[in-house]
Length: 87
Length: 418
Image (cartoon, rainbow over all chains, first blue to last red; front, side):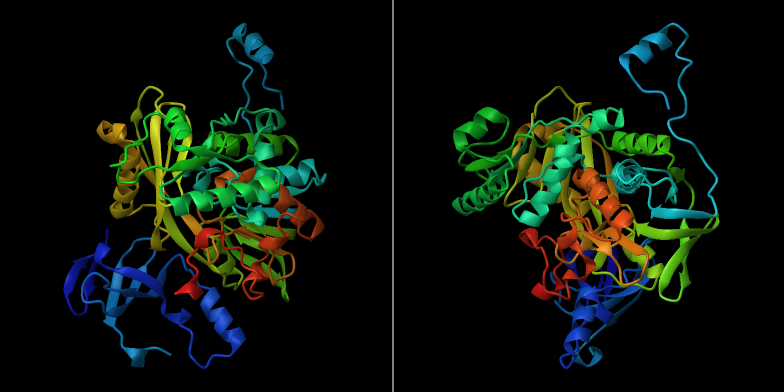
């Protein structure tokens, strides 16, 4: 299990958090249908580092972006997001 | 390649069993192959075997980054069944199940297929309705399915907790008697030996690091053992499809997630079938060695780590103990994890990619092992003819943009549903 440092609550066990999707797969409200389709249904899915949206569902319920290596599970950054951070 | 038989064993008994040969060669890669299959798991080896056997192709290679059968083929719960609701899925898996029934003969290798019954429990009236619908859908396509009453379930699998105070009371079940388990390693080894004897080059410790392009078309692969040219190339690396397709610049509707399984110490026979449920996500069966094998949910977040999260293990075991309380004193001896391609509708992808000469077989979610023969058969057809077989045509990569997803029980991440 990973320990995730919530920007609001500090270090917490991973089972308080829920994964949503990667930051680059958030569909902009004014995206053209083809672009929306690509964004929604395809992923880089790297065997390395990606930026993921997680939510502290069983804690403060805030969204955050976690930069994590998908083989080692090393978390290099956690940042809070608000509506202004989304495309 | 000499045939394995009781007679050859007996003959061997008189000369100290000195007749055993390596089951497959260890060839150096050639400069060019007609078809290269990337990935030496069950699916890749089966694909190569049917390319040689059914389509008569001679110049085929399977490239494997580690050792054959060392990925998900060796990391599953060995369950074989075709009890799916969606016609596209149950027709594909049923085609495979019929092949499983003769696979040991076909390959001259004992895959230990054991059709002990695949029992899906229902815990409520709603569950029983869903099971009846699923069973009806299967029977309409000629697949065996029987609805069982509570009493029938209690007689069939006596160690289930049938009491009304059970955490998950059992109302009945749907059984597919032809479902069961098989020996996972033997599937990889059997296909490898059979493919090798038909001239397929199985090249291990050969990781693909890039694709050779001629314009859009893919004409070869860069590997850790040099450049290899190819007429057609089939990616068959479920778990790592995102990574390998990424080398060709493709983004897939797939996220890689960890799927775990675990096994207890061996005990005398206590469970006769493969137990699953309509409401929970827990698979329980007893291996031929006597260990109780548990499987559960995937970890639900992207990972290539091949090691899982104890939270999910606890969930699977808690569900298993609620169903079969007699398991509570067993000690868990081993756990393992595989990296699964979770596609966005929970169904596999077998077919063309946007790049000429490059084909994809992946997105098997947690259901790949049972499909091994059918996956190999349909993928071989696709690679040999350049066109999908009728069974894999619905599983094309472009089905998401066409809105033609095959969403069995919403079992994929389905990003459009949240």
